[in-house]
Amino acid sequence: MKARQAYIAAHGGPDAIQWKEVDLPAPGPGQVLVENRAVGLNFIDTYHRSGLYALPLPADLGSESAGVVLAVGEGVTALKPGDRVGHSGGTRGDYATARILPAAELFDLPPDVDFTTAAAVMLKGATTEFLAERAATLIPGDHALVHAAAGGVGQLLVQWLTAKGVHVIATASSNAKLAIARQCGAAHTLLTQDPELPAKVRALTEGAGVPVVYDGVGAATWEVSLKCAARRGLIVSYGNASGAVTGVALGQLTANGSLFVTRPTMGDYYATPEERAAGMGRVWSMLRSGQVKLTIGQTFPLEQVAEAHRALEARETVGSTVLTV
Image (cartoon, rainbow, N blue to C red; front, side, top):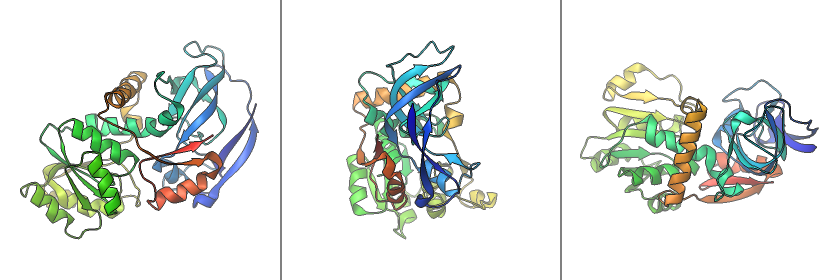
């Protein structure tokens, strides 16, 4: 069948994204042909496009999609035509109307999860799960600082931590976004650009600072994160929305209280089929319970993905963004 796929021939801005029409062959052994119904937009896609995470070129783009199985290759027994499936974080190329994927990278969508919800939440939900449950240890009554709290992962993380009994101090770039963080359960909200932010975090924690900082912003908030962490605290640096954190000196960790830092990736927390199944099961459970609610702030037609990249990088989006097919 014919399909439209997005790719880049060179790293660059959103205008680097190009489209091609391809003839997809029948799936080979262990492969599945999937027709996409909805595609997710994630910051990692912009890193791949820009070259922050440099890829061999030309390179396909997209890390998350939901659709229907059209055909399966030899040896595929767990899936059949007509099955509803999700894909996140595996082989790139989800910016497409259809594609061929390894069957091992797909998982069944529960009957109560529609395609749009799946495309909006799989990668962000899995990221939230490992951040909240496994990358750091927090107990009820602890404080945590969450940067970019109105973003796709940020909203989910604030809700998830709040459900665990954690007091969340949320930051965002505007008062409107702080209001969203409060709606998600944040106990306190502060503007990212507030020069008194570290002092205010200290005041809210009786001078101690927070035991865990979740920082998906990167370069622009690194110094603030260092100043907000408690003695022997942990900075979970999981994103580069403002650029990568570089030139980190171990002396900075000493000077700010013998701090710990981790730079996690989903691949290391969803490394096995068992981890993938358990993690996504936990995401669906939290959504069903109502403790975590998904906000789809905006949608774009799939072939307007360049405009979606511009909006995401300009911090004009709220919650999750879905590309409609």
